[in-house]
Image 1 (cartoon, rainbow over the protein chains, first blue to last red):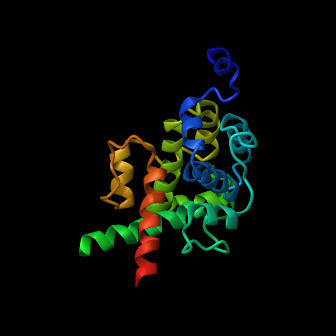
Image 2: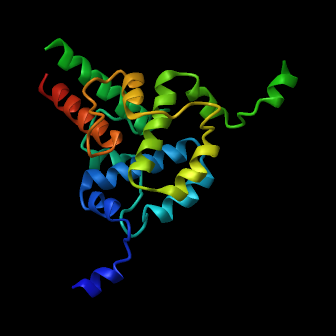
Length: 100
Length: 100
């Protein structure tokens, strides 16, 4: 078993642990979508292999990421990145708690 | 004025527009914190100059990002990245709306 683990292509165990969950994989896609939104092409070219895109997780469409996150309030046609929308929703949630 | 604009060091206008707002700058810090959390060092070394870290925005501490976002429910001592916490808060907010 130890021999098999040594051959494991995913060397970054912290990433591997998070890629095991749906929310973890979606989180890596949210960052990928953010980088694409801002045309950070050089960053993308390093981020993709370093974060195991293609083997550890798949990056498809905005609507798929929204589905995976299970947050129907996210708007796939929005002109701001998903991360921006997530922050706005989290700020709303913060207000809900403050009121209660 | 056009001459001054041509000399503008921030070439990526989409980024510039977002870096003009507090939430925009905080958003770039959330991604920076995510990359650091997962030790994505190669990505960081490209992300920092490409996203104008240091000139367009400053990256300091988790607690400062939380303050800038204005979301007191975020936990600076958490063992998951801020992005993960933001997703969880957004999911809670989604449920609040579903109930109402």
